[in-house]
Amino acid sequence: MSTDADPGGMTIPGPGTESAVASSTATSQAPAAANGQAVIETVDLTLSFGTRKILTGVSADVRQGAITALIGPTGSGKSTLLRTFNRMNDKVSGYKHEGDVVLDGRSIWHPSVEVMSLRRRVGMLFQRPNPFPMSILDNVTAGVRAHKMTNKAGMKEVAERRLTEVGLWDAVRDRLKDSPFRLSGGQQQLLCLARALAVSPEVLLLDEPTSSLDPVTTESIEELVRTLTPGITVIIVTHNLAQASRVAHRTIFLNDGRMVEHGETHAMFEHPEHEETARYVTGRFG
Image 1 (cartoon, rainbow, N blue to C red):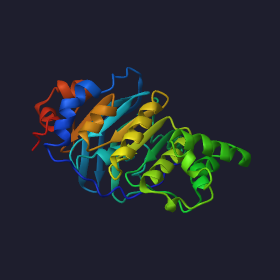
Image 2: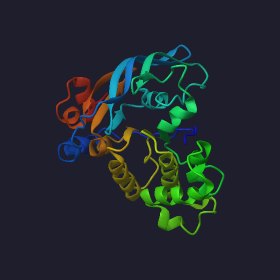
Image 3: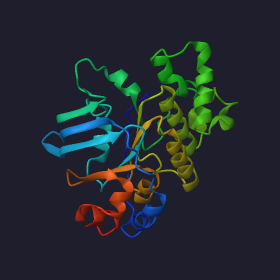
């Protein structure tokens, strides 16, 4: 189940901090590349708001069962591209696209594609936790109810399975009827992740999911994201280059309205094809 949210509040690490860490740890920590088929492809994709072009001519692919990181400076179009994958931008004033996004061989804008069904297949977790104003139990099962995936008796089973999967069950098992707003920020984010997973998406979009969380919770979410693959394809927007090097099999680097480079994460961090990429991943950017 996806819902819109304000993704504001992004922060960028200084060029000598996360970038340097990413460069020094890419060799030892970057996951091995996944060689699955492309599940999402962008075809000469141009994204605009009014007369302002955000991205121009992006052609790339996202491999099935892999974690793909979208990296680049603020304003490079990462979140706009991410939100395009499940059409979260469609009703934003002035938004328009040229080119195409293909999911399993079919355009996501094909007349036969229902947006609600698309968002079940391509779920999303936002930067800031956005629980619904309903109980913890009802939060987890909101999408399951909307898509009529199980009967009333099966709802608690779904909730227990997904809350256990994200490591939250023990903390909330006796509080399922409570408001989610009594949970900590990290717990709320885990709850939203459980909600996204409850509808069994094929692709999970993560928009800076740990930027407002403490290091311990960040580590637990990174580990959980790793365990989701190869069952789920994950695309994560992150400004944290060390995080990209730790969790992503593949990386797409965006800058100044362009896709500069994309490929295996360890290769991009160790042997980038473009000087522009080398400067960004080693902290010499700008």
